[in-house]
Image 1 (tube, one colour):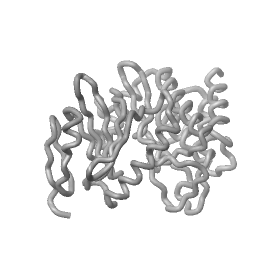
Image 2 (spheres, one colour; image 1 turned 120 degrees about the vertical axis):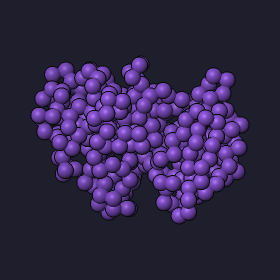
Image 3 (tube, helix red, strand yellow; image 1 turned 45 degrees about the vertical axis):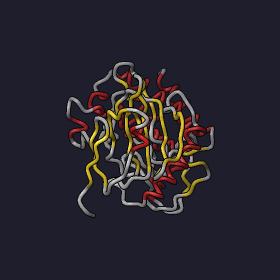
Image 4 (cartoon, one colour; image 1 turned 30 degrees about the vertical axis):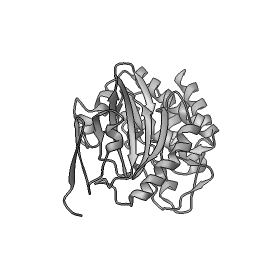
Length: 289
């Protein structure tokens, strides 16, 4: 790979593997934020025009962290449109429109002022867990009730997803945004979620190993409701406990919720709840315990 190319647009500066024009973006408004560290092949922008902010996701440029071909990133982004439209929900970022441009494809989302709980480009571990400005650190300092309320939204969305015959793939704390002033939670970046049935054809699937079930590492395994039950248990341990240290000593909620989360992350899939909906019912019962 040659030297990265530096590009200036509006108020932002970013780097690509080679020059790429963004005339279409400049016509939409002034860029005030850029997110160029993803390994998905997408580059994202915050733009503003006439006081209105939007979130723009684009595939087609050769980003630094992406090892694939831009055409593959374009296809993935196009395919995600079906998911955003199918799974419209109050806790999912809102897709407003999408269209092709000269060299790629664009999705426009309603702007959400929340912060990503896994902002690895700004606060890579261990700073994520320790730095007072880290969104994840700040989230963990919230009251237990606020964190439980956030989980309610995450679980409610995934029950909705399950009813729509979709499974979550690549869900982790980087998919969660939180607005610290309004205490709102949003799910973002569901691009790799799959319509059922879905089988693991990769071996190690996309995602963070902190949230992944054993079958997400096994070629030929079914990825289904019980897989997502594991994901939901893992996010509970991330936001309420010691993440991969799933001991009760690290757990901050009641014993009943701990037992529900522990049951969800059983390595043997047949020992887990059969669905996210069943998990959520048990979770809500334990909330009142």
